[in-house]
Image 1 (cartoon, helix red, strand yellow):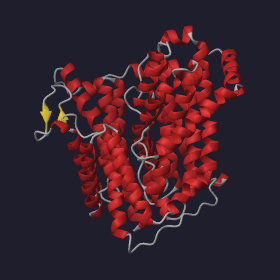
Image 2 (cartoon, one colour; image 1 turned 30 degrees about the vertical axis):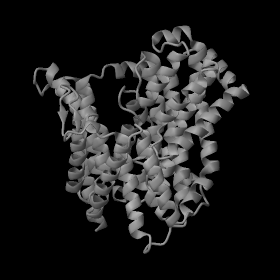
Image 3 (cartoon, rainbow, N blue to C red; image 1 turned 90 degrees about the vertical axis):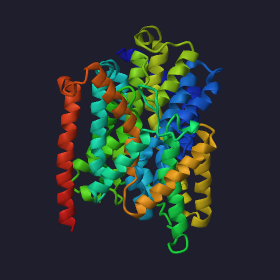
Image 4 (cartoon, one colour; image 1 turned 60 degrees about the vertical axis):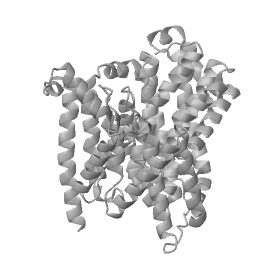
Length: 496
């Protein structure tokens, strides 16, 4: 680490008005894209890459980094206010964010989301700046057994998001895993459960499924309650969390940020897995786990710190190894290549004039996010005051656009609506939707890597315990599931 180069990079980024301008524009555009259901940070970066062609590499990359950071944070806004995560990584945020909004604390929830995102993103950016090579070496050791064990570790968090009935949570998770089996077999390429439909050969696309679970289902609930439940009037004062509130979640924020950074640095994982793992860990170690899901600030801080920490983590393997950590960094990898830069070890040798401004830009983007998020929170929170009869058609329209925009397919709109109907009736009978989402995220990773591991080991199931990293994840998953079950059971008995 050349601190002279880093100091010069900070000066270049912060003192050059154009660099600051492009970070600001990218971050603001990212928040707007992330807040609209279905328009992910990946899509935002992909759409704006052509606008960077005529810019110097540093300014073009700084704008794309701003979109990345802003998009991940922006997804929490719609998750908190209308119970539709703008991005997959915000799906864990709505578990406590939306109940807070129902209590009239939408502004406070957005304020805590902003502060946690700032702290998590700054932690991830600092770790990326100073520890990139070391973390990349750990991520490089991940093979099929490690990825399968990581998926099992993530699925073990089902206990923490199942609500009051673990059995119903498991049933929801199995339903989600069943959905992931639709389409081509990941290894043999044989079609499964397509019922002769060509549109299902690629499986159920994740974004339409996400919108169906939390978008259309919410529309149906709004229609049902429109005449009998008065509209919630969100209180938009006291948006900035108090020092006491920040101190109460400070430990959770930093723990979640570090977890998110590490998980994000593992190629193929991403911000959504980091958010759910951090939420589950926060609930497991909390002194009051029974309050999670009812609307507490800790339940907003944990996933937001983790998914924003994962933004810095995901950049690590992309820059050091040329391997994207998630979908967004895959787009950024293409942007680097288009600008004549080849990610990998040689990038640190030949293009320090680009690497260090990227580090400085990621850190500066977090401070801009804090300012934009807090100054705009009052405006964001006011959206909940819109009359339900007006808001519901708007949500329905965004659901249609979001599910259509992924592949420009009306078939996806129909699939999303069907999943929304199923989710509506499941929640009516108190089957939670979050385990379905967790299964949709981790199911393909678990299945593909399980079969690859068994093929490599010639059917030996002990291969997962012969490798230290995979064995550690599996043992941790078992311990967490057992301890979480008894902690939650004890807390519910105490509450009763």
